[in-house]
Image 1 (cartoon, rainbow, N blue to C red):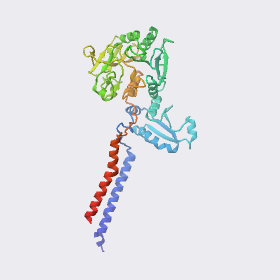
Image 2: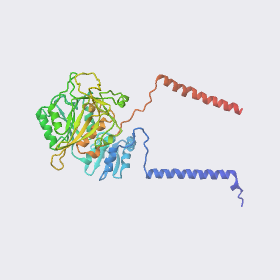
Image 3: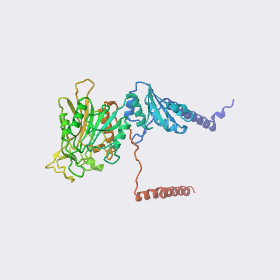
Image 4: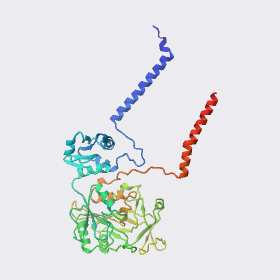
Length: 458
């Protein structure tokens, strides 16, 4: 038997190639098998655009029963939905996804009252909730509504020069309203001058920077509400006596807060924190980067918040209240009592040296089981207005406060981050340099190198 062909170079080459192809195919098949069995992904984006937030992980991780998410769209819109909904399914085996082409199955869309494409319905047991928007906030929000049930209402006090939720200007609270609505609260304005009683449907009462005095019946209504187990947030600006809209002292309201252990000082805080200068803020906008230990701010570590035109707070525990500091100004801050001039001037010889408490959270012991009153006081209101709510961590802070006040501490976390603008801005000179190098110098180097290699071979 002639076996010389086995020893030939051609046979060895074919054998090597065959083994190589078999190994490569085995690796590909194995990788695909593992990828299908263990669906894992790595998000390498700077702000984790393609990762679900801590809040979503909490909600899905704590599921006690199965959840079905029905997604209604045309066939060509399904792929984008799979990218997002697949992340939910990967978090828990209790999450089940159904993709429904409403063109092919219009009866299912009609039964679910679907009126537009790209709509998701979250079903938990007998409860169904439609996602207000098809994004992480919308899907997770629908889950929360289905899990929690009931209606949570944020009542914003009006009638004494407060920020208005319908105002879309820089000083308005329309962005605040939008943010809390996306976090599954209803928002309504209440006027305690018309009726000195906090409506029973109010989950949280918000006093948003009044410029006028509250009359005693209004204050008594707030006192009765909180001391009866209600929840309230007080955003109080310093009583500046400049400009066309002076801010009153509001003594009746401040006396109530003082009886609970929070005294709002009649001062203006100026902070020379070097970090403020790096982000373009002046001394009249204290920048907070360090927080105390509390459920409201525990997840804000490493996140900055800003508070333009703030006042300081003094806190202590009273007979029925327990008060905790949330955060303070930096050690380089000062407190000035000159509130009648627009000129910002720090006088180390007269002004008090910081740090100063900027925000505090307290509880009121009603003496009844499961009926604890809660309140938050912040020495500033503009941090939650349209002009500043989107600054760094301000929005997350506002929503964390709402969650704590409504006893939804399990939902407190950093919300989904918006897409960052990662574009590179070049000056005209830089653009010309990049263009010259890429279009002319690099090709010229390649041509010269080619000519040199050709000449050498010649």
